[in-house]
Image (cartoon, rainbow, N blue to C red; front, side, top):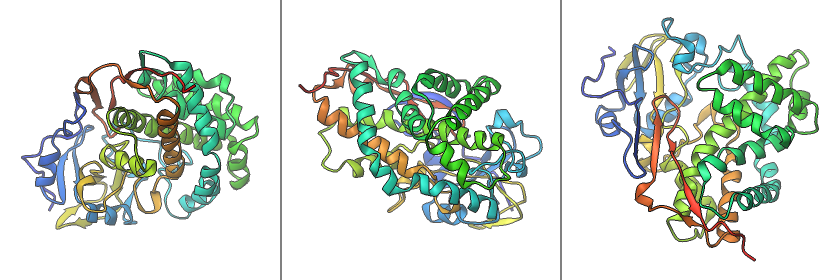
Length: 372
């Protein structure tokens, strides 16, 4: 039977903490066993998976679906952070089965490792120019760089004119308090991308002719918003790490370590049991929300679930890694005098109180002068 773990506080809490301070409730979650039953922010029980082995099983189990049509009926979609159902909007993140496989086939060639490696030079040029324009400081890179850089990179890929960068930033920030206005902004970005040469047109050509322009715009929204949301948060922690330690010998290894220790999201997106499922002896009724404690399993040997696993592994993982590595290389090579403008102990991370990950509140940096 499904029983709440009474000694586990709700882990989906808002707050501000030190950079090295553990996420609230993490130890209690792991102490509760492989499956902890806690209260969901939108009400009712949610099963939190706390071990890497069980996490990988859950992320590949076809009985546990990402289609939000299975969410509890009493949940408020906006308050719970639910996407439209798979029937309402064509989406990589909520479609399942053959529909999901068809969408992945359309996206995969655009975001393949070889293609991303070919773009590393242009990513470095973008990072170099944006850091140069932001410097010499003091400048808050969270306010001036970590959001704008990934939006510039993904916009260039898709064909969004750089003149619309401010509109892209505004749309991303409005998603939390005015989603209607945000989605209208993303629709304009998608339409602009379709009018220019870029991956947006390529994606359109790979999709079935039956897919409407509105559906393509939603797929482009997902690429833009998810690309910003994950890389933005990771960039703050990555830059803080670089600025407080010796230059890395292996940039790719550093990026992977930061993503493991500070994943862009501490929990996976919502999943729901499509039928009765037993996990580690806990029986979950149909419609039970399930999430994986991604940050919590980071200490397990070989565990790295920052981009998920299974059929829904993040399609943009190679893009994100390439973007992050490019920034590290540029900062270390081209801006050797860059340093924190405050003691590292003063840096703080903010938890939004949802499935979204924490991010740095600020990252004040000075000495951003290009090497002569």
